[in-house]
Length: 197
Image (cartoon, rainbow, N blue to C red; front, side):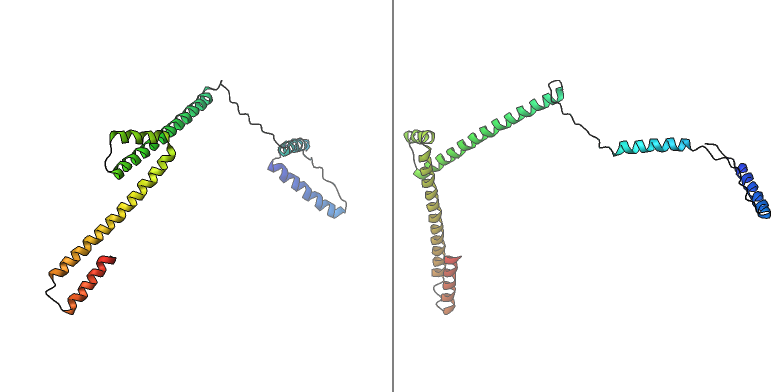
């Protein structure tokens, strides 16, 4: 494409003006001779642009390849490490479960011995054999211990209430020399508080 200078354009406009003036005087239409630039380069560029747009519109197929091979050391050692870690955690969980069960059994043995009061070495051996061999008997022992502990708690509550009543009675007997209505009223209130508080 030719580069056209501004002066050339100016001269072309001047020639066109003169031709128009001369044509208006003669009423003859005279065609100016203008050199048109070569447009073949633009056609070539538009064809290339159409090809590029066609390539862009085609769907692109992307393929992802995941390769797990011993040849890649990081992946291989990572998988082996994870497997070892999982095995270690499983072993630890199993060992802890077994250890916790042993602690629970020992706790139950101690509570059973407390329930019996006194025990001989032969009884200890018998209890150990029950816990090792007969697990259904352990359930029975657990129920016996739990009912015994509930009875002990109830008995402790009753003893505590009796002590409160005895203290209230002693306080009131110490003040029995006053036999007016106020003292009887206070006695009734104290007795009520001791029973229900």
